[in-house]
Image (tube, rainbow over all chains, first blue to last red; front, top):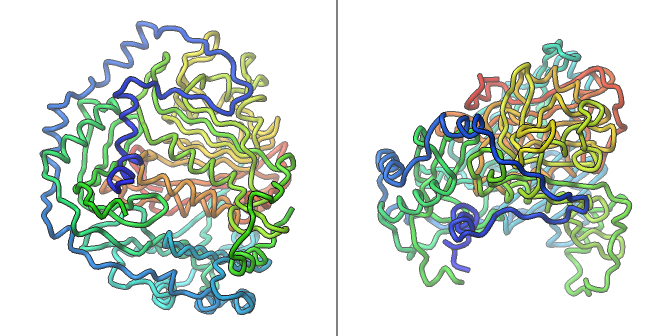
Length: 319
Length: 293
């Protein structure tokens, strides 16, 4: 499958079924399905559905996109091939970095190539193909009573998390925005506002940037507990790879693709569109990336995040 | 059956050739059940903008939570093996309507006992809104004849008096902070309800978040997996996507403990008469259509 086709299947090409007149209504695996009971919308409902805003036309959408689309050039294709860091990582080394001695002992027994190691309280999974690392230590969860009494979260959570990533082999040059979050909880009774609030974890969120552009679907989240330990770490960070021989598309072609999709989604005249450049995975499971226009489309009742490739496939894409 | 994943890892690394087709499947009858409902087109009586990626997102969760993978001689090579949920129902568009999500104990025309409340873990994907009286509402596809209409409402639900343990709402404003006290009234045995404070986003680039959530919720708590995988900072360029995980219990400690520890393969007892709710969220998360948390 051509790479662009794969991406389109996840974002844009789905709309073709509708364009071709194929009903998207499907029912599967529903043994209790009853015949549909339909009635035409009332006049009031028709008015309600029409009045808030009219469907946008292709010309209106083109104008909105033209106003927000950034410029791009061949430099977006100039990105070095990234390291497959999970592929270079042994579970025993990861367990040591995470200071999980029981898990390290388990991993020590595992034969070369083992990607999944588990103890009674910890799980470590490596997925080199998808660029994923998952670690959870359930013994490092706070007890509910302790949380209710108030946990004092560590001040150095960010350095603990970034040190761990560095020791795990994360490519430092790809680390973009880093933010320190607080995961909190609240509790209360029926109909009432919260009677208790408290913090559970400090979570360091790391976004990925290549050429100072965001990489959709790549991030790392590291939860640090009150003892300053890594309670869980979830990273999706596949080795970065794009095909520099991909042919760059012009603004008109990209704009047309976006307009076609937005029309299928019934966006209205008051739609708000923000656009930025970035990279997006060809497949949700990782692998090669494509430079793309990332559109944030705020159109009630549910907004959309769309990716429109700014390249057409090269011959190498079939490989 | 509890799977020894350590043994699975050893097997995966050492076995190079296995006649997978000859393996006996796990006992699906003993498994917990997963169901999904997703709407992508609103063309059967109820209004709503088309969202092509919605079923892809919910499917990603459904496929992963039911991913039994391969088990060899009691060793789980990949997937969730005996802990995977069974595929109990996948409904996309079609007849999705109000009564499927309403309880007959609340409204006479309710029919959730063979639909929403019949699964153990259920995900619903549809347009949502924060209705009057802190009442979450979700848009249906079919405007149902009789008393039902185009909106399923939290106030029409009684979750868990049939079977449901975990409800996941891929829907805007489904767990707004102002609704937390009210959601408790809809629970009659369900353990957790997960949703979003403010707007939730649709897109092909978000599909993997749903499979990752399902995958992670077997290893760590469902609540943490929901928060980790569905938080998207600056999704609009300025606003965030803000997931909220919600549980109920017989005390504050019980409800909080469920957030911290309950997994797809570590299911605690039902809460027939909950008196407390608990929610976990990201401080400062600032979505569209709601204030910052």
